[in-house]
Length: 357
Image 1 (cartoon, rainbow, N blue to C red):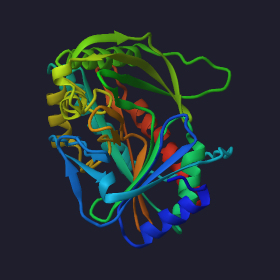
Image 2 (image 1 turned 90 degrees about the horizontal axis):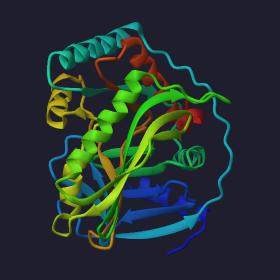
Image 3 (image 1 turned 45 degrees about the horizontal axis):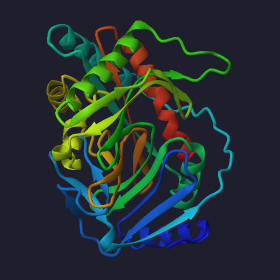
Image 4 (image 1 turned 135 degrees about the vertical axis):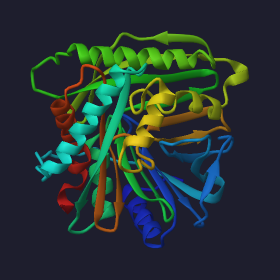
């Protein structure tokens, strides 16, 4: 059902005030906004991805994703007008102990990579910030307008909490037997009238990601095409991006199988995948939950999907926001530079909540 934007906001506010689950999303470069309002508070999940729904999977994924099924919900869509919102350079206090701890983790990961068969390990951290007052309407408007090229979403369920993000990374898009994914690595601040210079560490990291994704796809594809690597802007940052497209093997085109092959990607975990994931679970000092998991709408009974990696996201609990950021560690990493990269990445979600700080 089509509604105007104001009515959509009212429905979301009401759903949230009644503590009922919902999902809200807008695809990259789209002015269409979709909301799915679940009509009960049951926590549904899926392993087959066989029904139309909005899926929400954790980093530590074992074949089961949470979902809001369309048949248990009412859904609405609207078109919104993009408005320019000025960005602010937001300074947040980070204590020296937090920095030292993260840099020690980076040094440890570098040492492990040098002495093992790992080529990349993605480390992350979280940052808690107090809000003066949470306003969901302000958040929605800023999220949609600040990052029009990203996958913008909100997921809420009383058992998982309130999650929000603007992801630059496609995990998987399918249409029948055709698929699209991407390799994303390297991070720099966008500088006006300056072409990014990528150093050896960043170029090698991108090659690691491309090679790992294409190797994993051999199990489920009959044709794979790899684009040239190019600069890709996401919020105030620029990354290296390589598009990977092709054809799925007909007998192996189930979303559950393909998602299990791709997730977690080298961009959020590392390579080899099993080794890097095990290292992260054993050594990071917090639970990522749904950060670096994946999410998105499932259409047409498994034959069409648009799944994204849950990057540049935050979790909101009452008036406390938890921001999540990370970066890929290789033998060429420098702890100070890795710390600074996480600080730059914090800015993406900070801009969304700026009026509430």
